[in-house]
Length: 83
Image: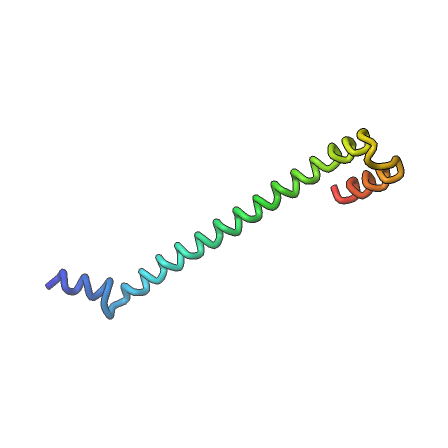
């Protein structure tokens, strides 16, 4: 008889559904939080890589003669403003 009450409590009309709902919600919000944190960290790493790499690419373009001194100075000042 106790097994029957136990099953009704957790799977039937008792308050057990509240426990299972809490577990499901906890898992769902944990996954949402993990996904959000992963996306933020990924964006931060990509943004940091672009900012760090931009001056090197600019110097290479200037050294290769692709841009003029005026363009180089203009882009360099834009990069320093965003950093």
